[in-house]
Length: 343
Image 1: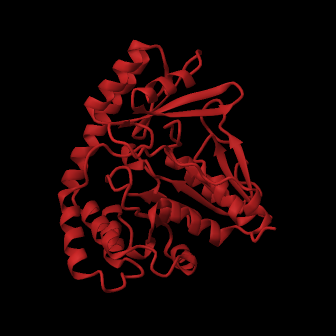
Image 2 (image 1 turned 60 degrees about the horizontal axis):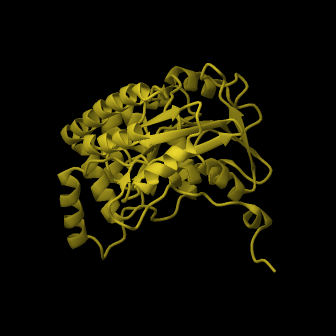
């Protein structure tokens, strides 16, 4: 006997990257920022915990939306705060896709898309990237929602924002630029939101603001789109501590820029070192590096794990596999590279 919808019984849930409970691991597997959050975040958390926890949070996180809008050059009404960017994607799926409808996403891409489609009882059509790194001209045909991680995970490659804008202009559905890693790239799609109401951007503070444990993200879109998405979000979807901490984080630009530059410098050094070790390195626009090799890669992942160094192994197809290495501190990257060199 089952108590659940058939699609829920049949689906496989999302499997997150390993989060070891033991100490002593070097974690380069889930694209966390290796540096602590801004000191202003800690101050905001302490103040909120003292003054605000007995009250409900602002249901629309207005303070955050105003600060984010000022930073991004959009109105506060163009921003919707969410419990991580995963909730942003959930809200979009709830609002746009029902049973029997179709969602499109590139292959490979973020694994959560398929899980969200299964929950909605709809079909996810995964469309392979073209050899030149582009997507087919008919990518959005027949879709109720298009999801594009940009920069992409796990490869770190990126479509030009102009390409996504053109796609949205020609589509009959919302085209979502899932920009979880955009702060590590030179360009993004937020400036193009005003050009086409079908273009939507999702962001997270997990990566570039060192707040993965806080769970805070947001959607940027035309105010009319945001107003409709508001209907399907949970009533108090982000808590008071998260709102205060996220607002403090995005307002401390000096700290953000300092940490970002450290990550980018280490990323460049990691790419160079991996190429010298004989790997095929895909130039990254994110805070991780994707590598391939003619030899089997799983033994490398397993050997590193035995040495308490976690990276991410992907088996994408019968003859396609790769390793994704998050950018850690210089000391963490040196330890990983030394272990790989000994192999």
